[in-house]
Length: 221
Image (cartoon, rainbow, N blue to C red):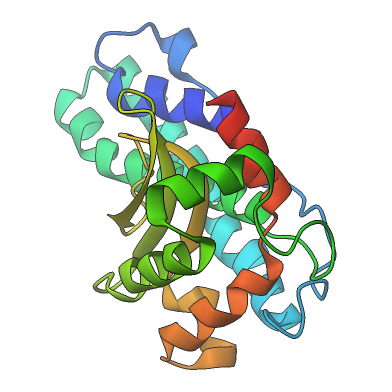
């Protein structure tokens, strides 16, 4: 799903003016969660997970597909202005789909797998940040510091061969680094449980991080 979504965003958001119509039309679908809605409790409530997945993520999927369909119509009508206008909808909703598809797999029920990074991922974190605890502090500071809505990321810089913490606004995907771990810091990800206290949400979410998946992304990067 992630690779399909990534290809969709690249082809339809950034190359619609030069590509053939058949090459850009790709429909995305809402992925199933790899666990039950209540599997992350008490750290993330079942109500939050169900609304976040069924409502918010599904809206990005539907809006992206609608924008793609509209784009197809504008090609047939040669409406260049409308094609350009649709780029914002494609980027926002396509980014929302990509980011959330990664986010769900970043999470796992408490007690499933390692509570902290292991192996090469642990070594890389210690090398770059000094310790896992220091990494958490820096990551939390970046996440809490996001103004408005956005995402906090741990990414891999292939050119510099190092881990980096980054943030993106709204639903912008992480493009300048290979994403390893992404945390949604929009209020819809935590408000029902943590109100507007984002630091409490960030403190809790470390209990349900799927470090095995994060480590696998690093090995592939």
